[in-house]
Length: 471
Image (cartoon, rainbow, N blue to C red; front, side, top):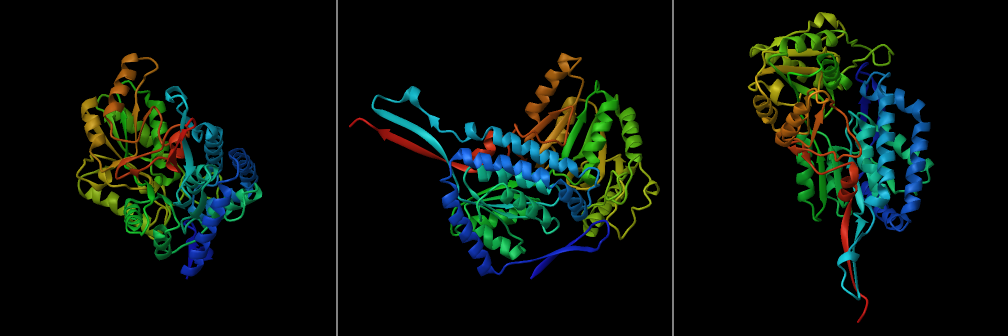
C-alpha cells in the first residue's frame, strides 16, 4: 500500500510513498528502541552539540525546504521561509535551556547528615511523533528536538500531505551527526499508525491534529498492553476581544493576519472576534477593507498572500459552514467576485467576514480551519469573556486594549486573563508561539505541554535517588 500527495493548487499528484508491512514496522520500532539505549548514554553536552549542528544543517536546506513546502500544502512561497525562522527560533531556545531543564534537582538544603537525595530527569524511551500538515516543521520540532536532546529516540510520522518535510528534518539531523535510528521517519496508513501507537516498545505518543483523530489515538494508547503517555495538541476556535480603547488601525491589521494567515489553517488562528459596541462599526470597516486587499491565487507566485486550503473536501466543508451561517441570518461582507479564482471544485476559498452571527451557528462554535471569521458586538468585558468561554475549545485567546497609555486597561486585561479558559492569553498579539512559554490547551484543544521547560518535563520522567552514605 502507498500514499500519494496531491498539490492543493494544481490538484495533481506530487509524491508517492510506500508503507512498510506490519513486520517491517515492528523491525523499525525495535531498531528505535535499541538505538535509544545507546543514545541515552551519550553525555548531554554531546547531544546538545548535535542539536546545535542540526540547526545549521537545517538552515542550509532552505532552498529545498521553501519550494517543497509550498508545493505540498499550498502556502504562498513568500511566506514559507517563516517556518524556517520559526523552527530555528524554537530549536535554539530549547537548546539554550536544555542543561537547566534536564539538571538533577538537588535536595542538599534538607538532606540529613549522612544522606544525599536528588531527582533525575531520565528519558522515556521511544517517542512516536504524529505531525500535521499545516505547520509541519514547527509542530514536529516542538517534540522531536527536545525528545532527542533528552535522550529519547523518535519515530516521526508526518502527514501524508507533507511527507517530504519529515525527510528533510531527518536529512539535517543525519548531517549533524545524529546516530542511525535515533530518528526514523515512518510513512504509515491509519491501521499501521494504530499498531505503532499500541506497540509495547513505544513509550510516549505526541499527536497534533484534529479532535476526532486525537481521540482515536488516545483510545488506541489506552487499549494497548503497555501504559504510555499521550500528548494531544488539537483544534481551536480562538477568540479575540477588542476593547473600547484599542488602537484600531493596529488591531484590525493584526487580526486580519491572525485570521487569514496560512488560509486560516492554524490551530490558533483567530476564528471569532468580539468588539465593544462603541468601536464595532469602525473596527469592522477597517477589517473588511484590509481583507479585500488580499491576493488569492497561485502560491508559487511571489505576489500571492493567500493560497488554497489543503484539499477539495476542506474547501467544500468551509463553504458549507459559511452558507449555513448565511441561511441562518449571518451577513457576508466580502463579495466573492473580488476573488475570481475561488470557484467551486477548486481548493481556493475566498476570505469572508460574517456579521449578524451568534453562537447558534457552527461558524462561531466549530473549528473552520479556513479564511473565515465571524464578528459580534458586545457591551462589556463581562459579556465578552462569557462568549469567549462559550466554546468546546480552549487553545488561545487575545485581548486588544491600550495598556501602554491606560494602566486600568492593563489591570482589566489581567482580570480577563484570569477568567478566560484557554492555554494561552495574548495581549495585543495573536497566533504566535513563544518557545519560552508552555504551549498547551484545555477542553477539546487537548492536553500536555510542548516548548518551555515543561516541554522537557513531558518527554522525561522523574527518577528519585535516595542515598544513605553513612551506615
